[in-house]
Image (tube, rainbow, N blue to C red; front, side, top):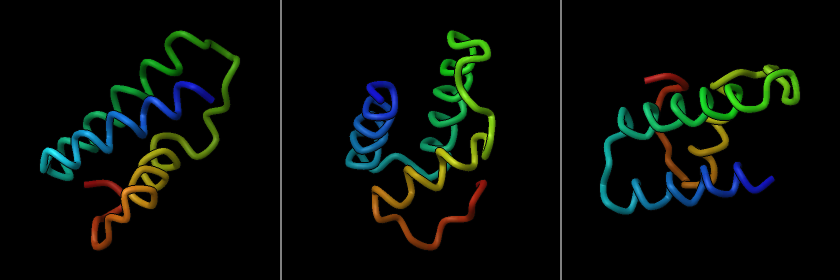
Length: 69
C-alpha cells in the first residue's frame, strides 16, 4: 500500500529529526483522518488509529512509548 509506505517514510523522517512522541502521534492521527476521508467505505476501521500507531512504533524500533501518548 503506497499510502502506508508514505506514512512510514514521513514518520521515519520526523523521528530522525528528533520529533517528540507526541508529534509522531499527531502525524499518525492526521494521516488516519486523511486515509479514511478519501476512501470512504473502501478501507477497514478495524484497529483504528492504534493499529497504525503500533505499526509506526515497531518499525521505528521505539520502545517505552505508550500505545497512545
